[in-house]
Image 1 (cartoon, rainbow, N blue to C red):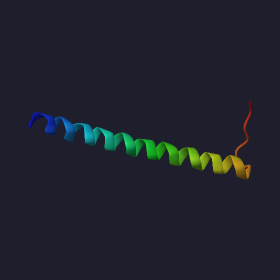
Image 2 (image 1 turned 30 degrees about the vertical axis):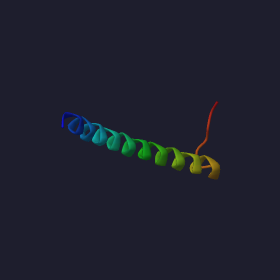
Image 3 (image 1 turned 180 degrees about the vertical axis):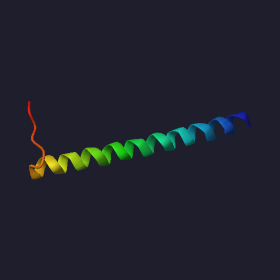
Length: 44
């Protein structure tokens, strides 16, 4: 019984992490697209 509660908590944390990860990937992809189209100037 206790294990199930821990699992539920872990799953919600995991879900939250996955959501943040997806957002980060989406932002990165958008930046890459901008770079490819030459909108953003990159200074090394």
